[in-house]
Picture 1 (cartoon, helix red, strand yellow):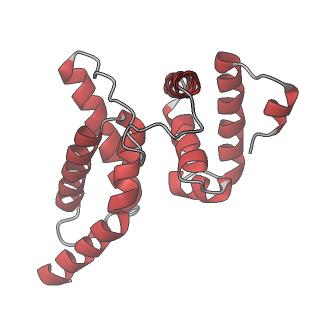
Picture 2 (cartoon, rainbow, N blue to C red; picture 1 turned 120 degrees about the vertical axis):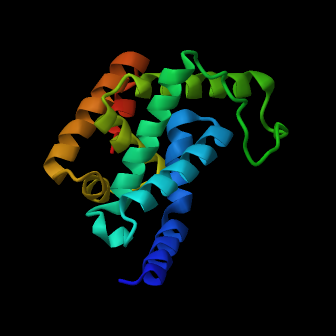
Length: 181
């Protein structure tokens, strides 16, 4: 493969996976500027890992995802401090809808923080499964393939993760427990 062909292949790879990579980085760190910088650096490292062709890497998106996670872990280790919580941003630009009162919004945000903290206590592979199944809305079969697991193993990790989250957060009723994927 010529250098131009390799560059075109990598450009296509970057176009195809940049949104998913940023989404994954945001899920991991909840800080958009850090996520953007991390994804950019991860693409650079992925390019350097397969300079002749992205096809030389057996699973390029998995390699990219692992690089993102490693870069974020490195950032937190070297910073030796916790990131300040980034204000929740959404399409409302901070404006509360008329039908939502401040108490409901505060409860919603607190539940989100509790859930994120609970997910952070899971094993890395369980966190990744939770991300793909609930954030990316992959079926468990697709999530297992993305992570290089058998479907049976992914189901076991998923059930263990849900059980652990239920222990940490608690469920309001048996119906909540039965509504798991």
